[in-house]
Image (cartoon, rainbow, N blue to C red; front, side, top):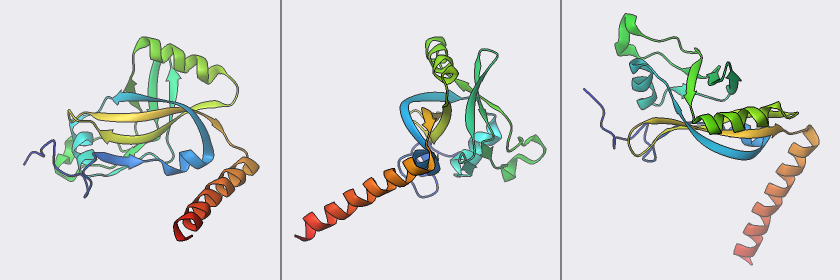
Length: 161
């Protein structure tokens, strides 16, 4: 039975399939961009079930194209022999102008393209939110956590007081 566009994904109503929470901690994201992703049918079915992991993946510009590397979309049970490879390279769809901008950003020292969220948009198409980011050092991570914790504590104090 085919899934409907407005059907919930793993109990979610916003269409979110996978989120890379670790990327916000490991990297300082400077710019974000929405990219389409080329998938085969069994991958789409698996995504609709919410069976994806983008935590250890990254995007790379190779031969004038943008590729998502090391993202895992688990196999779909109903696809049998026509199933896909879970960790294959997947082509990301961006405009030529966006691709040239991304490749220039990556050529700068310390920049990388990290996937932030994998979701279905309003039209039911799979999209990937990618970010151009700089890696954080250990002391930067601790400082970022301390600021976040202080903001949370301050909000609690203001609410209670």
